[in-house]
Image (cartoon, rainbow, N blue to C red):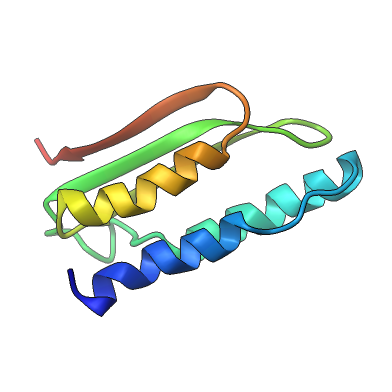
Length: 104
């Protein structure tokens, strides 16, 4: 795996290590978390020929709890899994989608 493929996973791991506080702070932290994940997720519109689509969605805690959904397009299943695994583990409520699949 190249360094370029590892960069989104490393940035996502850093995003997941953010501290948790009281309910109001968690709500704000959820907003920052969403922004950080969006920043490291390869957009499908930017990678229309990427063969793998990753999807993670569910409920994040906080005050109030919030539904989140992320979709990214990747060069390989391995790159998608490196993105998906830590992200899906951070969703502390119901996990609705959690997959890496080749485009149909």
